[in-house]
Length: 136
Image 1 (cartoon, rainbow, N blue to C red):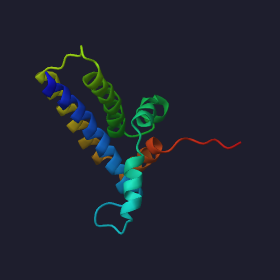
Image 2 (cartoon, helix red, strand yellow):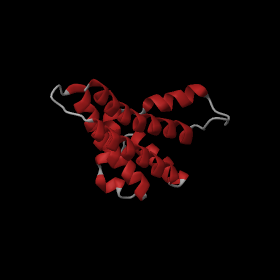
Image 3 (tube, rainbow, N blue to C red):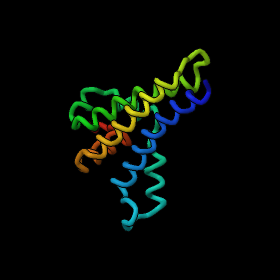
Image 4 (cartoon, helix red, strand yellow):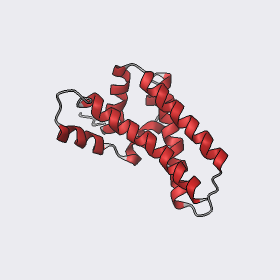
């Protein structure tokens, strides 16, 4: 069913845009702050799907974050994979009940993520945005 496929994709994008907004708000400044809208937009648009997924899959790093951020990272990985199946696998099957479960999981992950301390969310945002450079 096409509407279920679209709903799965929307679940992933809810996570993605939540994270992009957190990155921009926490690194540049939220609404009402004195911020450069251009800088905010640049950070928002800097979040890359593949890099964010790879970073979220790095369990050695993710386990250093609080539980709500770990849950968000795991949900991000799962939903990106579901989105790829929904968008690109013509044989993928998605039911209304599975989509309803995904919505509940995504809403919970976002809610728990936003309850974590700002310094942990900011550190996670920096982690998913920036590549690690090692200088010898």
